[in-house]
Image (cartoon, rainbow over all chains, first blue to last red; front, side, top):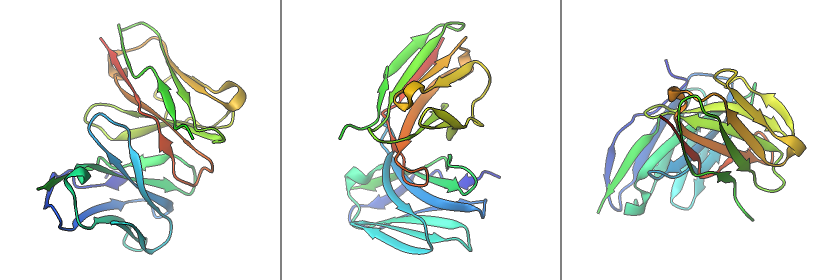
Length: 111
Length: 113
């Protein structure tokens, strides 16, 4: 079992709709959770970080964390073609500070 | 404020040669991390510096890899001798506080032939 699991996709969403990306993790000691966006051939770019249960909103992005169920999700409202990218979920454990990565979900926003 | 900078952006070397990658973190960021993404795999942690000290090097694959951060500023990652399986993209990231978000450089794409 991978430590951080994501559906590889591709996830196809019409422009203007809500894109929902999910991530599960195995270590209950995980304390910090991050969503990165990566365009092809580019470096990961931080989108959202979340540290406590519940929702965190930033513009069109909402991160949701449920530690009891060990999942973290990212919602993108009013999806735009420029949102098409691979979205990477990353988790930091409490015992060290290394990021544990999922394989990423490829998101395609169709005009 | 300048971001994390990595040199070179691409490197193609022959098996058995030596390559040195460099990372300049964001100014004031004591925490510096190296990661690697091999084709088709997840990004994997290599090591974590706090200033000039190696905080965690549990992800270093073997003793052909040597990372340094003299003076607690920029860092180098040397691969000697390089093997074919070392090919991939090497990312450097930095953060002000280890618990907080890490900002990534553009990566060095290493190809060993």
